[in-house]
Image 1 (cartoon, rainbow, N blue to C red):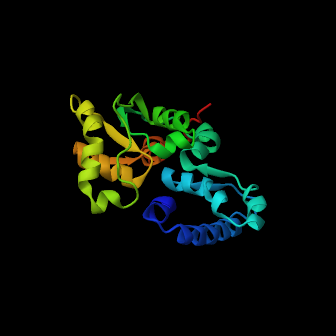
Image 2 (cartoon, rainbow, N blue to C red):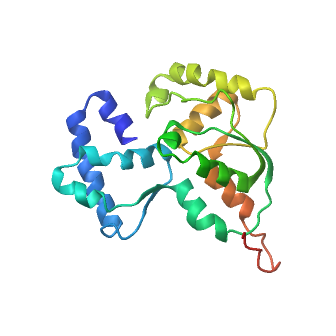
Image 3 (cartoon, rainbow, N blue to C red):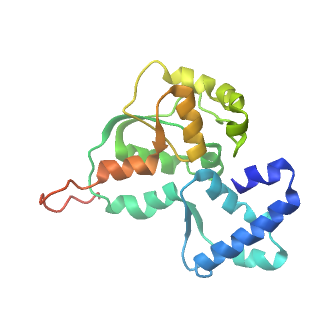
Amino acid sequence: MLRDAVELKGYTAGHDVMASRTFDAVWAASRGGELPVVCDASSCSHGLRELRAHLPAGSRARFDALEILDAVTYVRRAVLPALPDGRRLGTMAVHPTCSTVHLDAMDDLLVVAAAAAEEVTVPADWGCCGFAGDRGMLHPELTAAATAPEAAGLAGRTFDAYTSVNRTCEMGMSRATGHAYRHVLELLEETTRPPSGPSGAPAVRR
């Protein structure tokens, strides 16, 4: 998002300033690299990964000490093994994002999605939704054109859930298909939430 909102509009000096400010905040929050940095929007995770090139030389060694993970990757590694067996949905349509590919996190996304649904479908014609930060808000026709092939490929059936890993991508795909796209971790949380009442401890996923 930082790159989309600043660099792609030509504000390269502003991008460098914001990269340093963001890094300083992340460095402090991570206790100097002691804690992993986990971000729940794939484009922002990707943006954090790319900060290094825009930092002054004195900050780059510290940046290299950070572990930056998209939330989907973190959940697959650290959370999914300890979650209770859930009440999986029947079918789920998944819209990966450009950043998911750049982060090499496609497998993580599909594993997490499969923990929430029996059948996971990535449309053959999926591609960039064209939202590009705020472009989809200012020029919705760009997103409409970019998402048309994917929406057409999904039109032949209805899924129990529609998911992605970035809010603006979810907005673009919701507009294109007429179905509400939600973050995959929201759906995972709902499907693995223990039932209320004194039903005993839930089984743990092994």
